Length: 282
Image 1 (tube, rainbow, N blue to C red):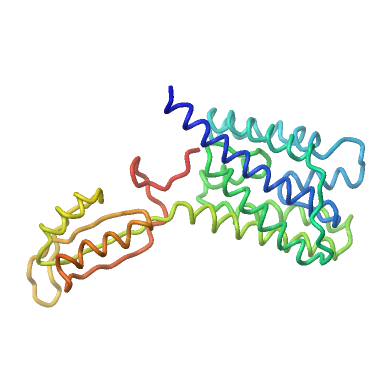
Image 2 (image 1 turned 135 degrees about the horizontal axis):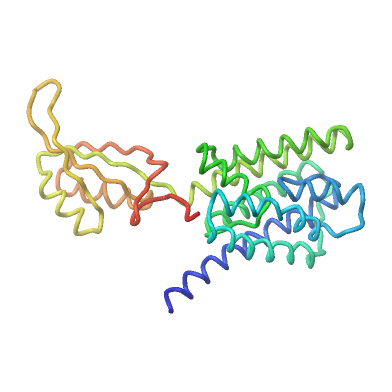
């Protein structure tokens, strides 16, 4: 029970912090400067600017109804349930927030709004859910076509910008594009930065001692058979995938045992494993 509540609290906290950042971007910067926004929030703003009858938060909820149906079909029930929770938190924050950031420079406002929105979206997507809208569509594209979340956001937002170019001044469209690209950049960097993994290959005559020491330091290792291309000698290669923060420890362990050992470190972007995997929980 304690573990379950702890897990739920972590997901809830990610959704709340991410929603506050995204809502701050919209209410404190985007609306005061008359920009559009990313995803379905942007579509809600297009409708709101033309027919300001319903609040942006309610328009956002209505637009999300068919999108949640797609999420239920392509992603899963848990993702949709947490996304409903996320949408409620985000919509409530969007409705209640009323303060503005005093930035008079529209370009600076677009850059700051993009950073806030992209960081918020990345935190939200590190949870079990999303806040609905384009986040669900980006997750679907990621699962079906391995399109990164930032690239998916650019594709969706590009379509919304094309629809808006006939209605809004060109300056607003370009400022919004700046916001969209910065937001997508922050989403990719923060989301994938929180799940960085490295692959290490170690070659050493003292491989047995190194393997034992790495295991004692809770670093998993696999032994592979290898043959030298020049000498033709048989070698044991140690193979390991670790979180980025464990790389210094791995190097330290190897060098202390064999300061002439060979270590190659490479990125491992997509790792499926219950212990060191970096796959999202969708």
